[in-house]
Image 1 (cartoon, one colour):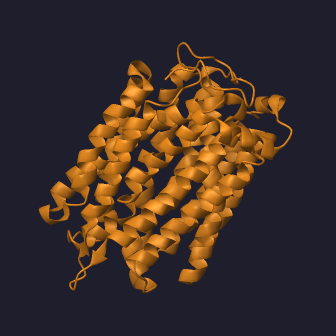
Image 2 (image 1 turned 60 degrees about the vertical axis):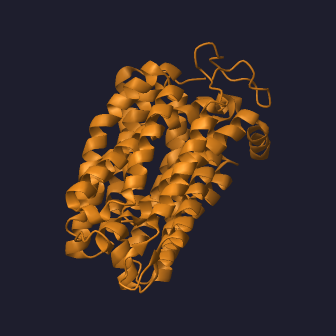
Image 3 (image 1 turned 180 degrees about the vertical axis):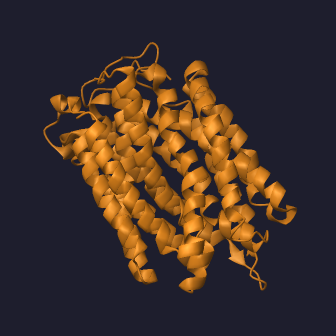
Length: 419
């Protein structure tokens, strides 16, 4: 069942979700370029920093499992705003954390509340936007990633350079408060799914997990995350240590990459709906392999090559996520979509955390402090990307031409869906 909105309210809804996603993404992303500061300030190793990044994602994964018990039992708006307020408070706690241990605790709290926000946002898109326009809608919401890299991360780094590393998190907490008020005023209640509420959350989880199409969708989702997050957390450490970029130059990497994806995201969204979601995913995933590998070799070639490679990396990574997430949301039985997306959030968070942790184990430092074996991280990412290319052809999608437009009852087989 899809909630029907006027075009104007639909656009407002998508922009609101993009704003919420923006703060969540900046909160997660800003940790990575601040890596050199954290390793020096707290006197921690690269592996310990990787654990700081992973703690957020593992916490988000655990909260997604918990959320799957209740996510379909509340109105989407009420639940989204409640979690968003708690996320803002956890982000504020990050900003005032005085030690590595207290920052770790605050990051775990932020991950617990923030991890479910992405799943809820994607669920709302699938609940309100028909299949044939879902690629464009997902592009609007996911443009928050581009905005985060163009505006959020560079501004955060500017604040960190002039006011200290605490400042970006405090700024995000204030922005969360503003967006929470705007969302409360503009977002519809989104309670249609309550009409088909199951007897218990455990029943929902059981129905989701035993569906073979859902199982393949979870594996596909994990591969999406794994392909990038062996590389992404260590980009700043690599280009500053091996490439000689200064902290003042690092924001240009995110600025160029984000600006480029702002332009390409809408175009990729339109092509996703035009040529087909699986076809577009295959094209973008194949293109991603080249910059993914070059990113781990580019440091010796100078700042201009680093900028060219990193910009291509961001374009391709963001580009494959648009059809990828449209596929994942469409693979869920609409009657169980909230629970599915909450569990999917756990899968993605666990995959991101595991990838970051494994990446931290693969890289090492030589006697001069230079990063070694970063290319090994790329090999892991390429392998995950190739597996996702194979698995996407195994998924069936609700709402696709020739498939049922509405959900089968919980527990019914997904036969008749199209690939």
